[in-house]
Image (cartoon, rainbow, N blue to C red; front, side, top):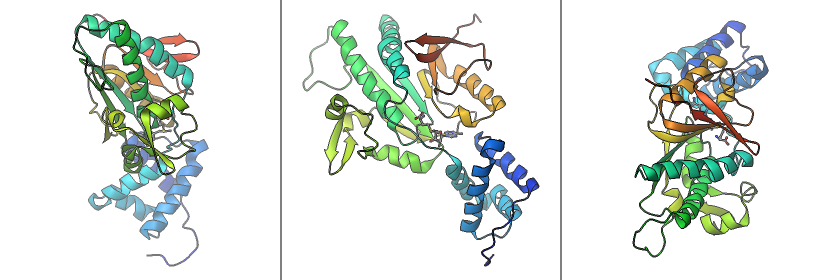
Length: 301
Ligand SMILES: C[S@@+](CC[C@H](N)C(=O)[O-])C[C@H]1O[C@@H](n2cnc3c(N)ncnc32)[C@H](O)[C@@H]1O
């Protein structure tokens, strides 16, 4: 145990070992631009664990007893920046064109279940935004294509026989806890306009709480995108501003996995600064009014 205040030096070799371990664990890649951030977080964790060398910290991380510390380190390395209605042009494409297309095709097949996955959901703003947009789109869709079913009062958020399942996952337990609580400050609500606030939130003290009916559409869960297990049969996957922290090899592997867990003609949304260009030939770009998505290309067996 160290009692000295002198920061422990991190050698080049130790940094390489720890970089490789983090990459293997979660796919996050720390190149030269981001090595400083990694070093800073490693120093903090070393201090917290009261260890006197990065090599002993590395030994802890690869031991059985170190599993918890490894997830704590990963958690400390994630960037959790997010907001409601992030990348409006892309969400308009989802809401106004893609959802309509999916709903029409599903209704023709009498398949009334819509499955969406927000992979790397952070504190929940993305899956809640998606759930609100789906509720609106379905209400409008039902208005134009109503099914001969008895009217239910009060009108449910999701009109029967439709069923909506939004899976929201992340590698960080702390953001998942915040997402699950579903309450947001004034600052976090800045990008939510009044019509959405009125319909989908309750004001509790100085915070806004997502209404129960919206929360019920979403299932929050821990999931590491580096693993081979992925939830299947998704109509749409949102994985925005996550891949940018992976290197090209890991991005390619992830896109391949997304291909396999999307339904036929399903859609993938990535972040504004991310692209599938040059990484795959199994998706076609859909671009409309500045919004971009990628659609699975069906290849004959
Ligand atoms: C910048 S946030 C993006 C949030 C949201 N998708 C958006 O665009 O607003 C990135 C999220 O990805 C998560 N993440 C990073 N690596 C991951 C992994 N290997 N598996 C699952 N989630 C991961 C982080 O914990 C973080 O919450």
